[in-house]
Amino acid sequence: MVAPFFLALVLSSLSFSPGSPLPTWTAHGARSCPGADRSPELHWNSPPRGTRSFALTLYDPDAVRGWFHWVAYDIPADVRHLGAGVALPTGYLGITSFSERRYGGPCPPPGEPHHYVFTLYALDVTSLHATGPLDGPALLHRIRGHVLGKAQLVGRYWYGR
Image 1 (cartoon, rainbow, N blue to C red):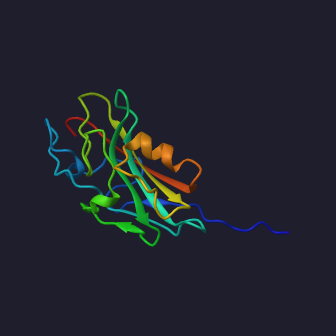
Image 2: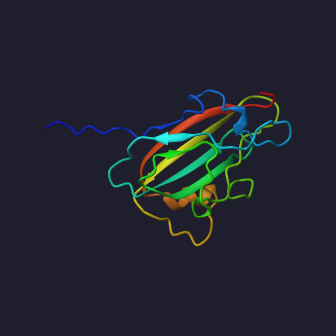
């Protein structure tokens, strides 16, 4: 018997290449970061069979306690693209570590580059039925047992870039 061929979920961007610096315009625009606080373009291929929605996070593991820059969920299963600077409807947005319901770009302190990990989760549920907006840790807890596939894309950013 021949094993079935499965394509892995792949997350890509026209705004930056994997492992490369994020565009300056994605930065928060605070302190000395010259950014416009706009999210990069993201797109992905067909998800695993049974996908009913997506969740998306942008996480900085190099921050002292880790930092969620973007938390989104209940994204419909037919979506395959988020344009640069997309304004997701509030119903899809969770709470970032900035305590806001929007994309919050990078602006790390001076020093070594920080890694910014975009993670797309293909879920087997249409909605997480959250009674209020979820923050990053609550989202990761809520999707446990519902993840059919996961894809990551990492960019870098540093002070004075």
